[in-house]
Image 1 (tube, one colour):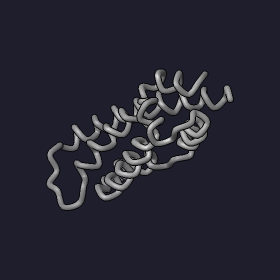
Image 2: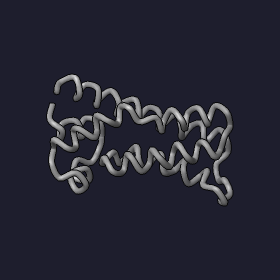
Image 3: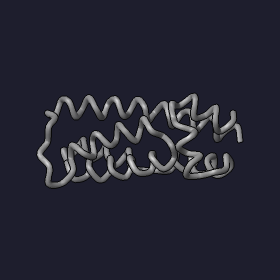
Image 4: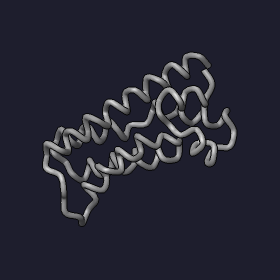
Length: 123
């Protein structure tokens, strides 16, 4: 599987990744490193503990990493949670809506991780 095929499979933006990392070899190297990123696990643990600050930190970190890798749908979903829990802002979602957003993010995250694992195995 090529890097571009990976991005098509996982719903990422190959063009966005290419703007930051101009060579496919670099994109592939860094997208595989995303397998080691712990920001989603931090977000999930924080949500289980009702830790709004931890949710913000995990979501904010995930938003940035995903944006740099062209994983736009993940970045956008994480951004919604980061903004909901941004310090100094009033929350606009109830807890049920937050749980739903986290569940939606998890589905996208797992699909992305599986695609990256398949890509990595073929390298």
